[in-house]
Structures are given as C-alpha cells and as structure tokens.
Image (cartoon, rainbow, N blue to C red; front, side):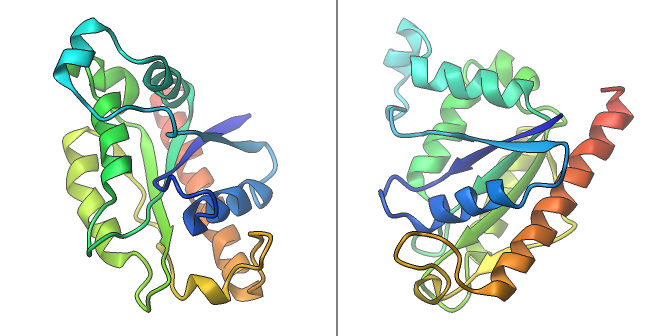
Length: 189
C-alpha cells in the first residue's frame, strides 16, 4: 500500500484547502491511501520549547511523514506567499536539524492549493520550492493544481461540485502517487 500524508495549511474549520485534501482522499488510485495529518495542536516554533522536547503533535506528524511514501501539501496563499501556520509546521518538523534526513531527504512532495482569487495559489506554490529544496525533498513537477474561485468549486458541505476540478484533482493525485511509487522503487522500497 502506498501511503501519502496530506497536510492542509489552514486552521479554518471550513477551509477550502482542507476540503480539497479530503476530496483528494476520495480519488486515490487503487493500492494507495491518503492519511490526513492535523496541524491544529502544533505550537508556534520556539527554541525554548524545543529545548524541552519536541511537542507531541509535531512528533506525530514527523513520524507519519517519515513512514510515508510521499507528502501532499494543500497550501493556501496569503499575501502572495505561503501561509505562516504551514511554514511553522514544516519548521518544527525540521527540528532538530539532524532529523531532516529521516523526515524529508528524498521524500516525494507535491503542493496543491485553492483560493477565492483568480490565480489559485500559484505564488505560494512557487514560494514553497525554495523551502522544499533546502530540506532535500523531491518535489513533483509532473502537474500543478491551482484551483481558483473556490466559492464556485465547493458546495455547502465542502464537497467539490465542479466536475472539471474533480477530474483535475484525480489526475493530479494519480500522477503524484505514480511519482512517489517510482521514487520508492529507485530507493529499493
């Protein structure tokens, strides 16, 4: 079974990006699963807190990502860049620095996102590349999912009502899973 860990970069209860991640879980290919991690209990990064030990919510996410075949980020775009809460989670997961290889090195990562604006999350996705590069991940460049005008894509229950977007999401997820499997095969996994 190919396991992908998904993390939404929004804390909002009715987050479009969380809804997109839940929708991704419903279109996974056979033999693959999407496990959605929560960032709700991750504190703001503080070196003093780190000196006392990695917070439990961070340890859970780190172990989940370390054991997964890939990482899927559903990233909002705030002020033309990455959301602080999701960057905070990635920063925590990179602590201590000696843990970066276990969590991120060679890990297939894809970024998708949805926004109410007209350009989706293009600038946030571009901004994530330098972060993913410094952590030594293997970003997937086989496709982009930039969902714009979220208010027209999701119904009141959070389900995707736009058939074309649902089809794009399925192609995106299937492509990323195939990439993650290919990377795993190269690593002997």
